[in-house]
Image: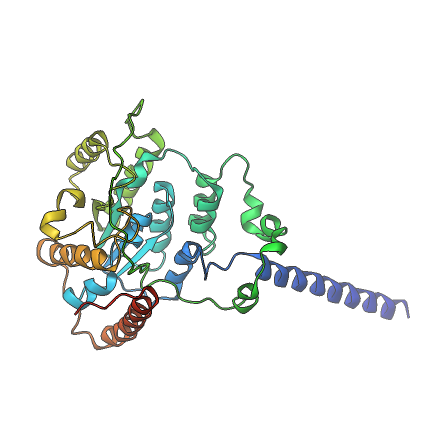
Length: 352
């Protein structure tokens, strides 16, 4: 009799524990931000894991990659299979661990890193940290990325159990939080975030005088680590500076990157110096007054980069691969559909 009672008590305990764990899991799924409307940047990193991974080129970096380059153009014009693992204000230590995470799945021929983030020697915002880190799958790379990124007031357990961070988010909940509890809406095109609207770059402010233009030791440490990781894996690392007019790119910044590239035998392309050659027009090719390219600018820039990757780097044209072509056929259809939808939304006549 006592044995039966113990067994029943044990079953009740297990069932109660399951109810509690399931309830907490459902609450967490409900309360964490979904990033499908409004601020969508927090959804970018997670989308990579849904891809069939055989990319020739991986981009890592901040908004100067995911808003300025279109992998669709690289494929359509040059047969280059690429993906952008970018996120809002992605710091260089996050880019490094993003690359380390990528190498768990594939080894690209080329990695492209945008150097704008070298100006940061430590994380500036928990919100930006979360938009990058929460989308990563759990691995040693994610753990190290969290540890390298956390601000003093952040706690590691809040990343392990996001409900600890978002338990007060009840007042912000909407129908979207219910709709996307267990499924996500695709918001990028191989990591590219599309905008077709136009806001010309006018009266762009000059850079403020800084007390010190030197990049910090932490930033340099992770650039060294990225350089070494690429060398160890036979990856060609290309440093770039996107043609964003702001935040200001100082001559002193430029000199440091040029010296580093020369010292480590790396290619470095500053697209700010090539805007005329590319054909970028800041009165039509930006949607936010010069901070980022719109679709027109991104497609011009991608065409220029694609030619360089094809002719100078020697990446092969893979448009003869039937399976890959089928994958890209669907991607191009989604890209064109969103392009048309955005043109209609903003009342813009599509260019032929």
